[in-house]
Image 1 (cartoon, rainbow, N blue to C red):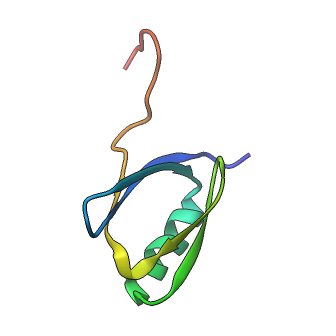
Image 2 (cartoon, rainbow, N blue to C red; image 1 turned 90 degrees about the vertical axis):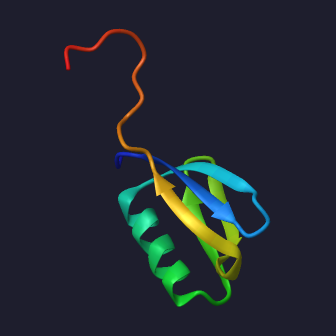
Length: 73
């Protein structure tokens, strides 16, 4: 299974959506937002999410993976 990244998508009006996606899904989302017209189906861990790319104002990726417990890093 492909590694999943946590992202946040911000919309005009202030709403923010969190999702876990693959690198490929993140790349296709960024391309769709750059085109900026129409709807895009984002393949997320919990299932597909339809986004209006004209309403997206930012896409943020998590800086590091979240861990539980102690780490040697």
